[in-house]
Length: 429
Image (cartoon, rainbow, N blue to C red; front, side):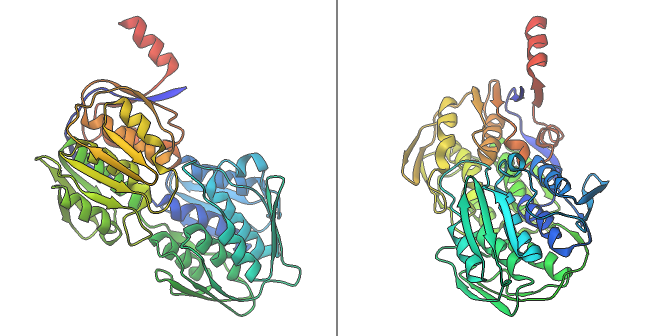
């Protein structure tokens, strides 16, 4: 077992470079299956979900060649439909993109039901609605998603009942080779949706409107290979912005697209944090107290649900009463019990949490209950005195490349240990 240990609060000074976006990398990796040839994907984050995605494709018959730590060549020429290993695919949420990719390439798909972080019901009914509108028949049986289009996929006009990022991308994947035009209304607008569309267009697809709530896809007969670089990860950037706001100091976050960070920047400034925006970087500085705010998570360009846990730490540290309303998921506040172990005063009523600041927080043994909650535990530990040990760090590694090394490089008293290391340390003491 491995843990992340943070000993004491220290202000952060220096620079952190942001890696490629996890939420763009996963669908783009699976989208390469549609091309039936070679694709080179650059600026990949070195995280466990990317490694797992590549392992799934390799098991399906793709040839995977790492060109560098952040660049891979995927040759999907010999990929075999329906062979994604059940035990691998069910470990991650993004494996459901294989359904759209397999439908586009083979006219049929068979993929195990996805897993990933558990913070509430995340149905795939809108995905299925989209596949079936294109002419497929989709069922979920015995833990598998089965979808078949015996007469081929045909363009359709689709209105999502609710905004769905995964559904928007999955239907977009399925529709790129469908006959005729597909129109998706009430589409999600996140930057990684634009990135997936740009990747597909660079392969010869015809997609317009990505980044708006209406996306149009004109089906093409085939896609070709390409070389494509993933956009920077806005959630990784936002996480380090919160770390600087919590611990104090001055931190420069580089390799970002500042426009993607506007909702995060606005709330930090409202709390009294200084944010200076450059062409491809932001500088975060805090010297004074944090002010209470109200936050509600919403689909992009609203405040991102993936920043809910990290900002909740700041609400614990702010004076006065703050509220966080979760507008996307039912059970996002599972991490609250871990913050309470540190002394936080938080009450939860359904999708709304109230934070009463001013309580003295202290280090404690906690765990990462999901990816972003794990990042929140690190942020909290950076801002308080005393030793904090964080368990279940496998969740953190799903979305953050070398978070320990990056924070240590800017002054954090942080390290990663194994149980064996801990036993040695106890004997030495």
